[in-house]
Length: 526
Image 1 (cartoon, rainbow, N blue to C red):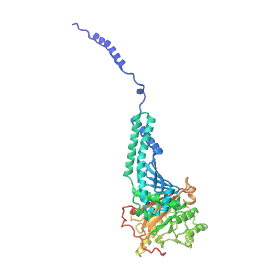
Image 2 (image 1 turned 135 degrees about the vertical axis):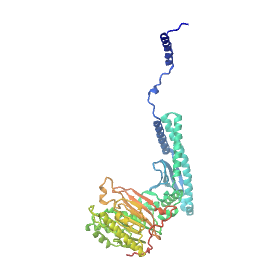
Image 3 (image 1 turned 180 degrees about the vertical axis):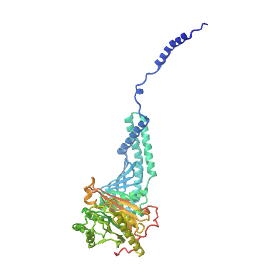
């Protein structure tokens, strides 16, 4: 067989290959138009799905995610709401609302007390013996309502997310995926709420609303420490208290204090605000205050012309214990010393008022122009050291002090280890700490909303004060309520309950705490 030259052979191969290549290319499908369009990244699709799920679930809860539950004689509405911090909010119209840090989850439980059912209320009036079992009935109603709310919320979340997913994607598979993810997120939120559930959150509630109703709703310190154990029981108690309120009167509730508790109203830095006296008088009446403690800066310039501002103190309805601040002069101090029912403390002098022994020292500086002088900090520390020395002398004499008072916190810190509690002011905002040797320092905000300076800033300063609860037998601090009112021109009010660590459930008092006094509660001595 004749051999074909290699050049010719290569040419023939190229000619034969052209149709094959062309046919192969012709059999390939034309590129789709979608292939030319940039496809969204996976994380973008996932973020979009999550947004659809969250929005749909939220809409579902808004539309059908609530349950109307008759709780005793009250008609209530329970609702789950999306939330960043979680917790429980109990709306008690028209008095205000209680907020509880009951759990950490992206959902909040809202309980709205809607109205009092006339027939069920009349039945309680006609048969008062039923009141003894009302709390158990309320707890049962709340348990049933919570279970119903959980089922309804699941349906609302899944339905809302599925419906929105179908409207957005127009694909049943994507819509079902959105509904399944919504159910998963709700289950995860429920698991988070269960894992972080704090039944003792009722021990430290925050109240917002009409201030005069705060004592009844927040409750008494002794009862809170000893009785508030289970969340459902206490929610029932709150509803029961409101029931009694509506049943008894259409006005705001009267507060009946625990006779074993001494109530101290701590005020500071009034700075010539005349509205402060009306607020203080109102709190004295509502909380049945036993004694008022003023940690200074009642005045602004300390001049004799300002002394008339102090005259309402005699009509406040409770003894007034006072120490000098850096805006209060010796002229101010002498004017107060001549007033009825006022106890001026200075140089560590002690007085027993309303069953508690107080000792205090006036501010060593007088700076009404807010000037800063050389050695100011050292003078405060020296004043605090003199007060600490006086406290040690009182303890050696067998009459230890329960509460020390100084205007500036830097002076108050010097008494650490010599007294259970020291009160101060000056910095115009509230602070609390337990110092190294066991003394608790409570710094009060401005009860005058910083006085005339309230209009210097963009927003008015709040008016701050607090109620301190002491055990009448041990003189130990049981709890305190921080009260914050809206500043100049505002009408908001918030009351929050706080417990010392040793009064938390399951805690034991620290043996290292400075010992309280044993002075007779009925005496007033120098």
